[in-house]
Image 1 (cartoon, rainbow, N blue to C red):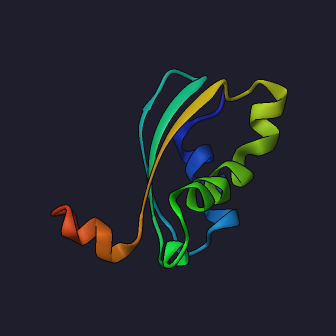
Image 2 (cartoon, helix red, strand yellow):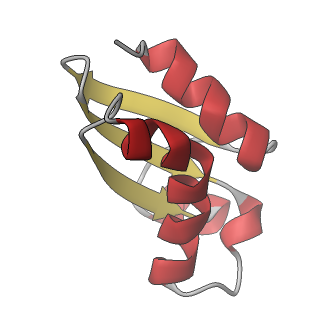
Length: 84
């Protein structure tokens, strides 16, 4: 089983400046919000690919069965009324 802290750490290795929130987990299914300036100018699919790259080994081994990902630039995150 992978903890929310471990998921956050894996994403931050790939995207060091990211703000990561792991909203739900049951040990296999996760929902994360990732906010990073690295997403500027990237399409949504490219943003998600960056996040999935960080956890790809865990998905391939079955340690993480599924992950719902929401990505935002800092500006987009603020525009939805959230603070980074």
